[in-house]
Image (cartoon, rainbow, N blue to C red; front, side, top):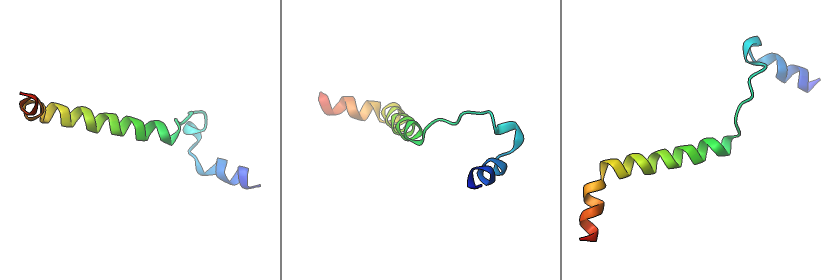
Length: 50
């Protein structure tokens, strides 16, 4: 019965959509943060190695 209840909570057009696992979202967010910070602070990072 709980499965039927959970199934009805989702809109009818979204019932066939497979949602990705949450861990992939976390990994994607971490990679995105690293890339954006690298772009913003690229000159500072390279000046540390000189």
